[in-house]
Length: 281
Image (cartoon, rainbow, N blue to C red; front, side, top):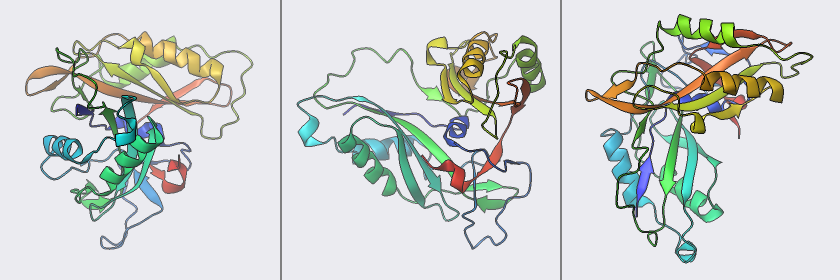
């Protein structure tokens, strides 16, 4: 069975459906006692992300070996990419598994089973303290009846955590200046969402260019604002590409953009925590 997974980092922002009481990750973690798990907040971007024991390849091997394609679906050869999220607790246990992008109820249920049965992870850390972290895995499902492609998938592997991350020309401040300068708020728009954060994901190609066909709205505030921001992201100049093992690689990039009540650009958000109640599907 052909399987593919993508380790995701900033994509975790996509699953914060509320954004109430946002707290920057640079602040003190909410866990007062390192032996008592705090359930009020979940981090989505931390200094040290959780890690599967043995690393990425070990997780790939685990998923490939444990996922059992439902027998009743083999005749239909149903394939697709599921996106699953889960929380890695302070003891490394995986819990609260959700399937955000579904393929088929039987396939989704099997993926939940496999993820829930994973060995304990090395938990995430912030300021030297272990904390709860929301993690996401897009996972490619292909029936054993489907012949594997004769050539390597043209997209290749997509990273979100690399030795050398992608960089916008001039850095983060230059990226924010570009967005601020080139975004024009639509007229007569009133944003009722109290948190006013638009979340957009895309993929940076190996040369750092935007893969415009993969630019997706993950959380919006108003259609007119959302559409303009998607167009703006697609107009970005090429980044300095991410690299792994001294080789350029494709990289997931997520932009969380703060908008005011009139639809005007406020700022480009960076890593922060999200109250657990706002992470529901």
